[in-house]
Length: 239
Image (cartoon, rainbow, N blue to C red; front, side, top):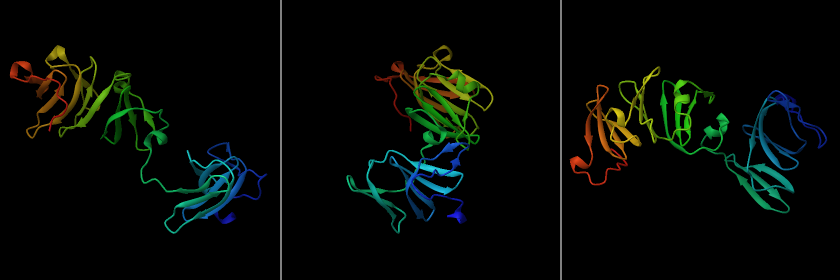
């Protein structure tokens, strides 16, 4: 189809190049869909193409061989038939796989927060920082938290970001340039911090494995633990 900058003639022809040098395999079928074209390669690999320079692979489909026909229904779903594997329906995902877009390895994600137009992702192995185009950013904060388990990330009304870690780092308060650490050395009940919440008066309530704390004007001003009558000091949530 020359008017869509997309070319395919027979099984022996390649589909040109895309993404600076990536060659396509021969195509078995091409379907003109509402939002572009759908191609099926041999061996089976399904991809959607908008033009010569842009394509999206449809990964992890269960149909792997003997594809006989493809069609699109009125809702935009794709239907595939196979003489050996039956019928397969592919529905467009309404969600964005940010890990895939950013090229991240599989991670356990505990918390996310948008702060100063960047996406902060707290994982079991550190902090991942992404810009609006899902490009990964490294800075002093990501290096500080490399290999550190992060349980919660929240921004407060004063423009500060609070990151709860589960090791000796404790609680991190970040203002976009510098950070302050709160841990057992300066009054925190435990270095293992689960979550934080800003109270109506601007104070920060902190839940840890050793009890709860209140932070006000940059100082730990209150501790709630066994001495205050809490028998189980492992605080899971603050609301």
